[in-house]
Length: 340
View 1 (cartoon, rainbow, N blue to C red):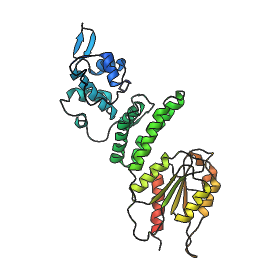
View 2 (cartoon, rainbow, N blue to C red):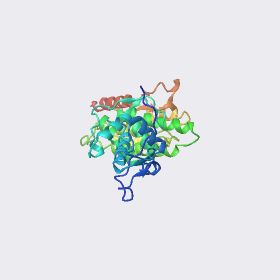
View 3 (tube, rainbow, N blue to C red):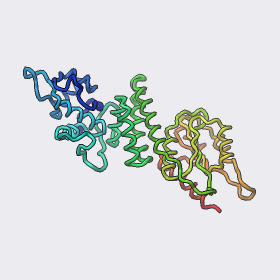
């Protein structure tokens, strides 16, 4: 049976303050401290037995320092993507262990269909923890979870199965709530971009005279959405392939100049919207050649993004997923490197 939805709790502060260390807290005071609603605390008490040890007059809840410690641990576990029922069980049985070493089951995290603050659907459990942290604008938690996903799964899987579903959920929530959650989308996008750049080390040297040029990555003129090519850049660098990232809205003339100067093995052009996809520009770039007479070379032009949909672009490779794009570009680089 699917767990009923509960309001996510934020990462709790390091420990109780001097004001509350020895004084039982009311439900309202504890809710303000943890950043959740009193309804959430009552719900956790009713569903999971995470309740106060003392009830004044048999009715009013009074939360002791030990109760607060358990709830703080519960919040940290749910922030990391542990389902609420499991988080409650672990929080209650933990006896003095720091939250980072509580015995969370090893192996791949389960996928979850439970409802949450964002419409996630059937996704990896990491998405749910990431969404909770993003909705709370908890930058440290978002940063930790993104870095952990990249480290555990690699760039391609982390992008396709953790980052993209969460970004799409934020976008749907934004579109359906009258421009609310804009701040969540901006914070999450910034941290995704940061995580991708940190995971893209400089490619290993290819020797004194590389046999093939780099892969050039650019958005079409007027296109501002860069996260997809940042993910592709990180995935190619993860394989040790040389790249040149030019980012958003690269003018056609500047792109042509860069291709002539670098002699890239391939050019990847991203367009999120039909209005920014320029087939004439893609064809022009594909026709650029360099090298000595009799051994002229031209770049492979690969396009990506929903803006390139339509029969007119079928003449160009258009991989749908990040994994497919990495495969196409890796093969092009390998083929060029094998040439005499």
